[in-house]
Length: 395
Image 1: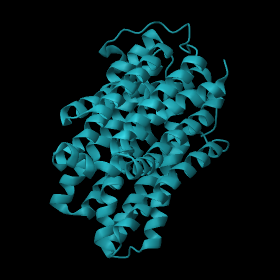
Image 2: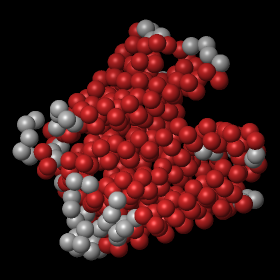
Image 3: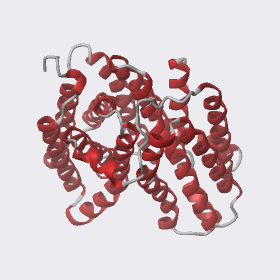
């Protein structure tokens, strides 16, 4: 078993999840015109995808703990490819929406199996680096997706993006079919598909604190993605073409933070890293709210704050996954499934809740409420989080 080739295969498969979410976003107006539907129906194709990623965790995790990682991932990639082909050849909106649902069901297996396999084959000392590699590849999806989709729409037709996704799914299936061996530990008892496994995960106070943190941080990340253009419009006079560049410091910060977080673990415990970075994210958002209230925001300061937000988030996320798989042996995949449920629910709820707050209290109220949520979740993590493999290390 070659750990590096397996890590590459499962990470590449998981990359298709966020890549699929964003690859056709540059063509959303064309999609609406093609199917003759309004903006709400267009946005539903994205929201449904995210909602299914969250809901499917109830099923995929226990299946992977019972039947194995390989036997869960490989069929899932074929389902994803089939859903991509449905979207490619759809002549009606509802068939296209159905294809998006099939895509989400299929790729949800990769998003769950990748961190689970890392927990299976890497020792506790190696997991942090492996999780960092996985998270780096995962976060490249939202960056590469719009670029690839824009080029396809410019030179071909927006639907051909789904041909690329189908080919990507088949390539990931072929690679993992060849390289991935079953990593489910032989001493793990087969899990039943029931709510008992979920209750056991949530009964663990450390795991529950990670779930709360994941919900709030993904809630916040998607609030930034949705409300950053409106914030820029209210503060500065910028051409629309320039607004997209403000997402670069956020993404660059995440990728840089993932790298720094791995090195950080040589000096600090994982629980301390999660705690400090979580409080740092909360104070960063509250500082943004403060400077917005007094009208002191300028472009360089906003860029620095976006970079800091992404950097702290990048430091936190791989460590969260590492601690989570350290906490469980029998229900490892189920735990990752619950984690995905919480974070994707946060991603889905964030823009909706933020929109309601913005309508009633303005955009400044969005960042005040977000900062309060992040600060509360950081306090919960500070009080409850522990890592069984750090019991003998100094805090």
